[in-house]
Length: 324
Image (cartoon, rainbow, N blue to C red; front, top):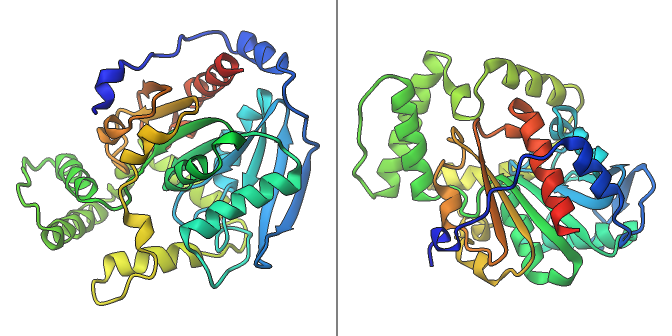
């Protein structure tokens, strides 16, 4: 069933002050105290967790794979602390967290659950970005009773799929001023074309446009992520075999298509997408089929939380207020 049949409601643009007051009036949660700690999960891996803010607890599921929470927090995500208690968590093998022998999807889902348990949160919102959508929906499928709501911000539910390669390559050629229509459905040919257009964009210093509207955004992100020694192990383990066909892929679950799974997830869901999100594709959200879905399309890139921060924060806080 197409997402269009649900006629998703656009969230009204209300004043942020009204939203924050509504969020703070909700009494069905226990306020988590601020903290910054390493939480040891069942297989003895330590994951970095920070808790900050006021309101219903919301765990941020970062993208990458293998990015971190720090750039989201410092590039405007922390403004959500006005209406939510943000639980920032670096996934294993990412950011400040420890590397691990096991990066399977079911293990990362359990990391989220064990962090929730150890923090003492009865229910949580999950706010995912980009690749983090795959983790968020799989957590919601397994633990729906623990999810107050899902917020999928510029999220993919089918990582490195053929449509991604085709859409991003087409967008790349458009940025180069080349009128090209890709007709091939061959994955090797799509990957080759994708690599080729990225090289051309790199030569003209335009690669950033696939991720952000402004190169200053990338500079700001690089500055934050380069400010400490972070591990890229999770991302390396997942992405390397996707770009090198001679390697065996130990984690095929990350390239599975989870869009059909959305029809089975009966929790309030907010989908936020950008008009120029070439990182996951500007049409990708239309394949989502959450029964309780609201969709907001904002002008901007893959990094709406920074480049269109005011609208992003208002949209998230309004959704939380309406659910509460």
